[in-house]
Length: 417
Ligand code: AMP
Ligand code: GLY
Image (cartoon, rainbow, N blue to C red; front, top):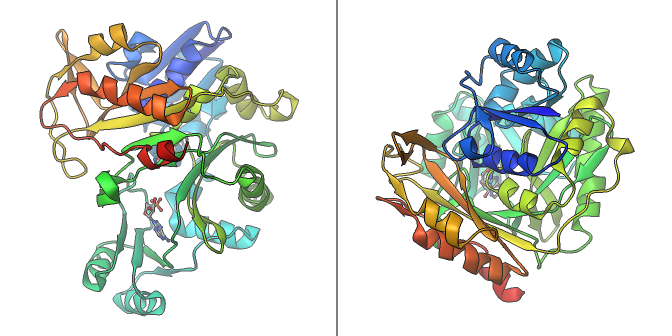
């Protein structure tokens, strides 16, 4: 099978790594990719948001499957353009991707499907904003309605800051604060059949101890030793299947990856957000644990044949990933700094620890930073403590001037064993 992956972050590196290890895959391309992905796939330049260009590239490469990684091309309808030329695509239509592209649309789908989520108001005027803030009280949760790369959400006790963020958005969702640990649960679906993956936990805040601003995600681990073993079944029944069914009944069937961001509150599981694609960095740890070859599963979603596949198989191993981010991330990050230590990790830590590239590019012989999140250092082990040790040992070998990473990824969960 010839596979073309669209995107160029650590999630796409993780997808390409798994696909490159799948004996069903005999040609692997990534567009535009990054310096690390170039080691496992052939890179092609493309404007990811240009559906016609992506469809042309897929046709030219005679791709049997196109996998669209990030949300922006999905919301822009890139999967529709590829489907229109008759090539199977992993990823939802632009319309179905509104589940991630519009928080208001997601809330409407959840209400119709009876999916538990935070109570919320959609506001467009200062008066509506004030009313909603006062209705819920502190802590305030204010979300830009549109795509914002994980940075459009402000959670604060400061009413003035909450109001200022709300007034800076065209349309804003203000909602009830949900307490309790967060879980990311992904499911692969063809619009009818839903296959849940293993849950993971993401670390959204920039600094240790969950301090600092929200980011795209600074690290992740899986499995979750503290979670109820029935969690996946419960979320399948109360969230994932009803959402997929609701979207199908509306005439906007959702195929691809449905990402449920959940809060485990004292009153039960609540959906914080949906995404329409694999999460980054959770994908790095979930795929590290998946034993089933990936291509057949992604193709089953694209072709509507998931019901014919055997159940997914998982390794006993635990996995941890630590994100190394640029100086000043999540504000305007500094780029162009040389990265050292990559060869040492490959030589000394493989196969248990490896570096997945996010924002990197080559400059002559050097690999330099090219984005906010630069690397996602991933490791497996017999338990979280071992995976964590291996990940941080590898992180310590990497040099990137001014870079930052959290030192507490999976720390609490590893102590619990
Ligand atoms: P989102 O982009 O909706 O995932 O929000 C980003 C982060 O903000 C989430 O991962 C949570 O940590 C936090 N957050 C979002 N909504 C809520 C909520 N209703 N209650 C508490 N925290 C929230
Ligand atoms: N890790 C959060 C996300 O992918 O949206």
